[in-house]
Length: 329
Image (cartoon, rainbow, N blue to C red; front, top):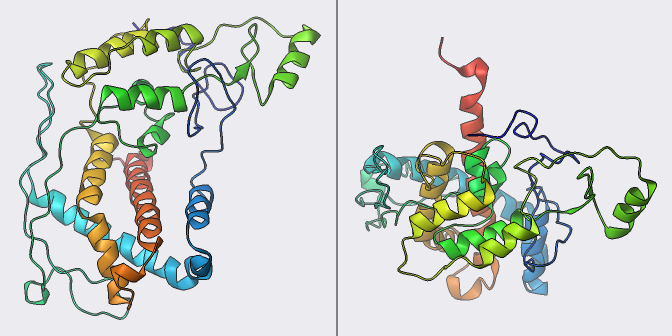
């Protein structure tokens, strides 16, 4: 049974029900740390730019690269839809017997064209110069329990890496859902210990209870650290064990997987990009006179930037179609 209404209606800010929409690269299980901004604008791009060689800085910051990024993202989104339409999407049955299944068979890929001045139709059979099978998606991906509990509030979980195992899931929970520094009475969150301590010393806040979306407590972290993450175990059963730790007062969900809606599309896009992205990037650079052995870190940087755009594009598209004004009738 879900918690009461006062605990299940989280909002952004210092509300104890608010989901943690920020994430750090690593977090010790015994130490709550402040989180970096999870905004998709600028931060990840800057990180990738810092990784490249000094001679490539100007190139990465150029309009040329941003144009290529946009063209490649647009092309891959079209190819993804083509791929998705050509395969049979098999999801776990509704009878509760959930097991990861491959998404479906592969198909022959048309030639790729990303030049702005290229008038060839990439889907035209006569223009194909390469023909190879696109690898099928590997399996359904595990969902973050916080995303399952409230997909709208925790959609950023879909962007914070693949969850393909229980080990991945536990790592995600510690990185992205540990509690910020907070007042033990009212559960207001703070940027640091000093501001929290000053708040506590004033003794003016009203006692409140944390909602289920407030994040992992130290007790929950200890229980999660005791989870067996070894390969070969029944990972789905362990996922539901984790659910009972994170949300002990709620009914189990129907599935532990991203097997429908936005989550499923994100999983499919990740599989598609993991299988084909490097080749798309390499070919687009080669089309512009930059062979793979001369691209340095540019291939990796463009790969990550386009992947970010693709995943955000899926989420934005799904949000658009969920808008009430667009609902049929």
